[in-house]
Length: 108
Image (cartoon, rainbow, N blue to C red; front, side, top):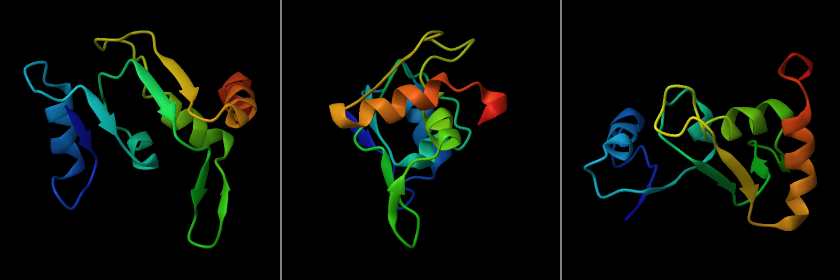
């Protein structure tokens, strides 16, 4: 079953708890960039549907720190998936993803 992060339905923490529960029926999570806001999720794979976001003024590319924060949800030390995978739906977005994930954290 697919669940969508929507704070209108459940608070984000409750959705994370439901997603992480091995006995729940949820095995796919569809989320906005809010997923990068410190949730501890058992996620093996992040697939970016786009590498852009509307920031209140314009659609712009995600910044390196934003990409790292979101991509970092996949594969977490101590989680069910200690190694993760990250990709994009659109092959044209791969250069931004690859360059963002190769930059050391201290440089981003």
